[in-house]
Image 1 (cartoon, rainbow, N blue to C red):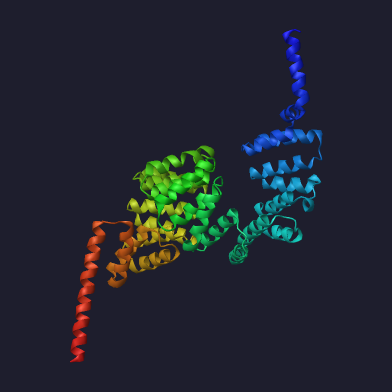
Image 2 (image 1 turned 180 degrees about the horizontal axis):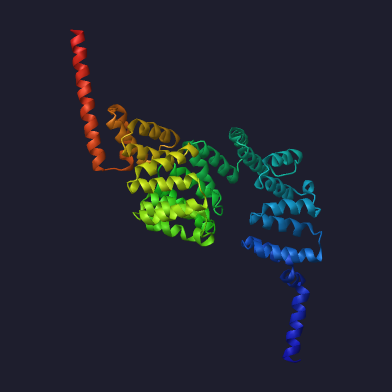
Length: 426
């Protein structure tokens, strides 16, 4: 027998023994599932399309295709596709979950809640998660939190629900309660960038910028294509005084959208912080032409003009920004800084207080607040503000001198009160 006949015989034997092997190699659904598992969602969609070309009613292919589309956040396509595909969500929990989430992601939280109420076949985890997210979208955070804590109290636990609970608590500034949930989510969801990003946002609210930056870097290791994550890295790096790193972090977002006003404004602000005020001013003015009246740009322009000595122009822009963003502590601080610069200390004090009530994690806010309190002669409050500022700037010589000044006055007051008490007793 020739070698060729032997090889042919072996091929026949292999195919006879393993017919599924040859089938799997050419099965589009198997290839689609492999592509999806590897994160190649576009490739998965193409393989599912090939399967549907042979059998347009293949339920596995249809479901897999919409799952891959959802992974690409093309939610409008998911909703329209499911409702026109002939799939029956009530008989397919996975499809029902996709449709409910699709309503939520396309800005229809009421429809998502209504759909969940009408379909009981959705998994408990998905029902709770989507329902809670819909309630948050409707500004009903307390209801969402009650729903999640009730489920947890009954023994139901899931890392995705921990993430959502932590995000809601963080949004309510209950960071002590939020952080353990977010830490659990980071440990339990190693492939979800939202978990470390949410934890980073929470610890940043405590002024722990170095730690926050490490979590955002972990998030971009998971999803380096998200420009918003890079934007947060830029802001955190700038807060830590690493302006070159901050500017580098903006390279990727700007490569995607070179004329995006948010990215350009961020770059202008960081250029200003790095001492390149004239470059920042030119860029901020360019952004203002793109989006006139934008409060974020007016805030940047005001900061730059203040640094250039144009206090009148700075206050004009910063006042408009603060009027449009009354709940932004950073904007309030910038206007307070401008008022402090021109000696309007009482107005500055009120703004610093408002900023601190919203978010007390900014060292610059405490620093400015301490200075105006000293100038206003409010030494007991100044002593507290100096102590808070010192936690951000340990060893700062200016703060040390302020502390000595406040202590001297407070001791003198104390001694005078003691003397008065002695005289009144006698």
